[in-house]
Length: 410
Ligand code: AMP
Ligand code: MG
Image (cartoon, rainbow, N blue to C red; front, side, top):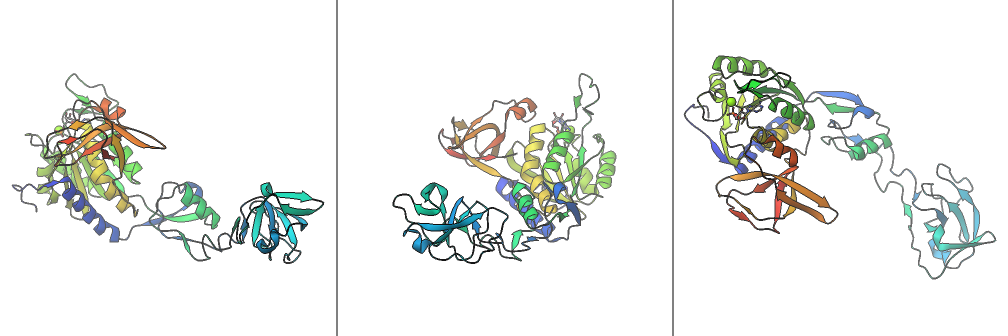
């Protein structure tokens, strides 16, 4: 669809599905891979699975301090204690027999012949013999994790496509994987457009504003696992916009902010058309973010995000972040929505999916959300007070207090 007269305005759900489809296409493409030290792997996406190099745990492991023995004869009492076994030690004195026990520490390998560990809190020790204190049933396997219970040698412990967090890093270390193949970060071009913009370090004239979108976008790109490349501000001029876009298509994704509304100097779509772009959508029935544009210029996906800072942020989180994650090889791409109980009724007019700046407070019992007062999608101060965006579906006019609602996390 690249006819200049045609506009493709979709519902939020439909637009999200279009991005997911594009994501499936980029997922199948082969991504470059690099190796990084485990200590530098946090936040990177694993390109090949980490396999267990031996059974985990590698031996039947005591999970409590106590006495290793046979469950069948522990009730009879008075088990003879043969010695003490610490974590990191092996038991060299042969299998435990009925009537015998070995004092054992958490993490130690349970000696052959023993099939349970009785907790030290549950026994009485008299003259080298240990018996249960009071009536208590002990089952086979109690307080022991069998060898290989967590993973067998050769099993996938961390699948490819997972982003390395603390658990994944620990699991890789446990397998001796001290350097890892990870996907290269996709490079994302960031182009802010607008005649009114000056760089953040400059002193704006009365009628000028500082470019904040390039900074928020760079932060969001990094958080999505991409490498931001910020281009100089693009003036509202067709030829300049075309030149800048042309340059930016050397990267993996192009993200423009501003210049996609209906104004006389909103030239981004025209410039893209001239360059031969294909548009997947040119608007979404949502607020903020209605004029958002998504398409492809040759093999490179581009997004034209509306310039109002909150619109830019929300549309990035909803549409761009999933694509960047997918290009980075991640299998779970978002966007991520949480559930929270609405504290106060919300009324809107139907017809647009709303993403309203909101404050979510959560504790062990769950999350509560309330709207934040704002002065429209340029209100960065409201954006700072918000820690999420309350979702009001396109057909809803009212969400009653107490309702469980969806909140976009960014
Ligand atoms: P536009 O989408 O170009 O019509 O811009 C909409 C509003 O967002 C205008 O008030 C712009 O001044 C503002 N805006 C556009 N680009 C940026 C930017 N890079 N940083 C901060 N505000 C911007
Ligand atoms: Mg503009």
